[in-house]
Image (tube, rainbow, N blue to C red; front, side):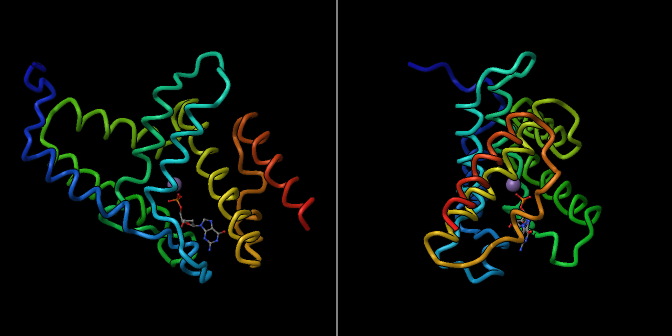
Length: 192
Ligand SMILES: Nc1nc2c(ncn2[C@H]2C[C@H](O)[C@@H](COP(=O)(O)O)O2)c(=O)[nH]1
Ligand SMILES: [Mn+2]
């Protein structure tokens, strides 16, 4: 038999938290919705592929890849409450950050368990503050995942989503982010 949970998260808190996380599966990414993309992906879809990116990224000295996977799958978790805010929704970065921090605090309280909630809060804050090499890589994954998804929508739906590519120009912080973005944009050029 498995030992009883030592994380302090009770079954009731776990199910409450997981039920809130369902919103991540149903909240469509606003950037695509605003552009009338058919069948837009959800926030969870986006975070999942970022987690896969962390799983397959080549080893980088000093980088904890497991931490990148965890960071990828929690970085937008507050959107379960505040929704997916784009840079064009008229919400300032500081207000977006305030809303998301308030939401994260609520989600962590719901979770109850000291260690698990603390880990999620630490991962989210590290990403938000871009305060580690892991955060820099995962922020690059955020942009790579978005432009790869934009390329796929452009090809599948015959639409132009150039603004998504333009919004990432010059913003990559790591060699692997730049390399993957270059691969995506060169494929986009070839398919023109
Ligand atoms: N219409 C646009 N939307 C954009 C652009 N860049 C990002 N976005 C969207 C994508 C997501 O829906 C949202 C934020 O995503 P996070 O993963 O950072 O939460 O903003 C753009 O250039 N145009
Ligand atoms: Mn994201």
